[in-house]
Image (cartoon, rainbow, N blue to C red):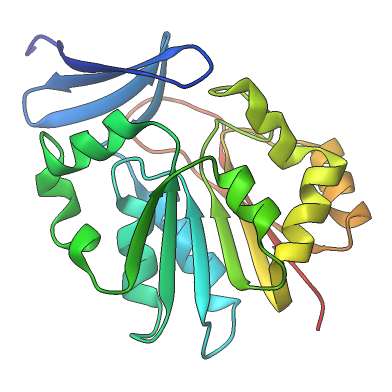
Length: 223
């Protein structure tokens, strides 16, 4: 078996560190002992975008993606969305953007140079909080689930008032889509209490290990 090597580290604003690891042609981004994402298994990240985009209607105008990662959600969104749709990507950790232009550039291809894409080095919560009825979709894959696992301040995204902010940032019929490594009935209750109509999708985990299914919540704002 090929050894796993440390390629680089990235400090997270507010504390903590990400590690970019490589084994042969495969890469992974890790936080502590947990793998956040890997280049071998990315079906669920793509599904996050595909499922959300199919619920936005025929002509979504503006979509927000929280978390650049390895570009799989962004790439799937660009494939699913019309040429007229603007895609804003929020990434909190500057070094993750550097990886996208460096050791992970082969995974991104031309995604970041697509004229529809604008990249903001900014907390996605702040973008949501500043918006008012401007997004047709908000796609979040910034933690392992609906809690501030990577960045403690991300709890703001999943609490009652954070979900109300997301609701306000969406246009009528807009979709808030959230990726999670686990289910959470209490979070579904919070989504519904914020006014969303919630669809919960379970996806089998891939990558050769026996894992619990991933969960994607598709929370729609009524017309």
